[in-house]
Image 1 (cartoon, rainbow, N blue to C red):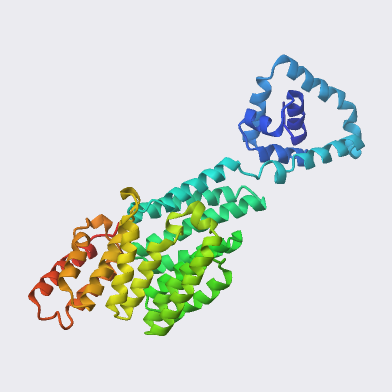
Image 2 (cartoon, rainbow, N blue to C red):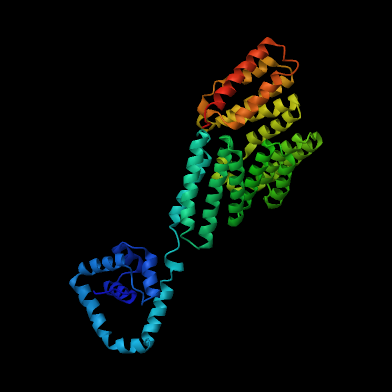
Length: 422
């Protein structure tokens, strides 16, 4: 052909008896391009597609070529009328083709199995508690980018909502691990973005989870007022049960940082009522995705231990920390989250020091101080730094064994700070 138009390309498709998808696959082009030819029959494809169409014409079977040429010849008498105005039949045919092959229907959805695969991969990543922080960050970023690319291909509300959830989960995991890697500002920015995606998806549980992450980050920055502001917004969004339970435990730490022991006790008491509600309201995020997005008894107890430690109440802190460890130890070895277990052991050590039990503190730190560098993170570093400060206070400042323990911690901290966190 001297020059292909959209109309001629569609005539070739009709002669071949192909659907838009089949024709696009045969030519090796996008389905949306074929749909565009149907909606804009007078358009002239670019040079690359001219060559594609010429090559396709050359490899037509004799029967299809004859049918194509016959259709062109039979329509030759219409050319004059087409110049003066389109024939009624052409208008109807073109309109029907444009609507039936509308790109909104035929080319902007994504395969259902693609979204399901992303959801499954994200769930597996959320449950992989033994991965190094940077590996988790990189994997979450890859899944987030894949979901973002799929989101650009669809306008179907259900698919977009599912993809926004995956993107929000990916941003959440990136925020959590960015914190572990010592990038606090980036972590906060990612957490805010995760909240926005959860909101776009209309996913109340994920939105509450991301607010809880922002609360945790504010607590670590010693900004409990900001954390409690997030708490108010989060509780308005959170479903009953586990989402509210988690938020209250994080809020307990905020109240502790404000030295408000009465509010700590009150919010932990309210959390018990949420625990009862959780039994009748299983949370979809916690059950279907789980892992990092689940809370559970161990994390609840660890949060309570951290709050009582901020209040320097060794008895209560030790009680809750040991409760957390007993839950972790009941898990199969492959599913035990080493970072949370190590952090809880540090909290046990801090509680023991508040109770004047140096030997108990030393024993609790035994496995932590043996951690290889690639398993150390900011959370563990911050907790161990607090132990180091406690050992420099009375009654430990003049104790030789306490000084030796402090020196071992100082070496651990210096080794960790000298090496990029994994």
